[in-house]
Length: 139
Image (tube, rainbow, N blue to C red; front, side, top):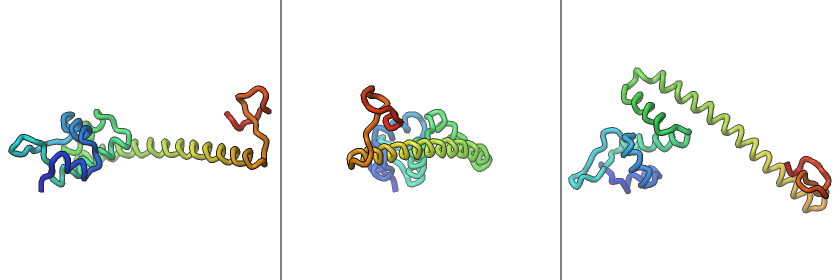
């Protein structure tokens, strides 16, 4: 079965503009066209387009996506290089997750501090206000 651009967007969760951009950038190889010269996609294309969305979320640049696609088009011989690329991206994502977890912990700590102040359990203090007792709450 072949899918229109709109149907492909619905199936992949990608915007029409993003899909068109990826096609124009050559990131969807062997794009097929219907009789009216409109792009159409099969299940294999859709799986690749979903993969492009994931690569984007992983932080791949357009250039990196092109390189990865070229490696994929080489077949099984390029698997070791693709694994290396994905391992590096995975490590970077794990580092981002750790940073996000630290940020969430900071927000949780702030919320708990504000809850204690509002409940009258702790006096308010700030590093930003000269007339409020210095501390570490409003860093």
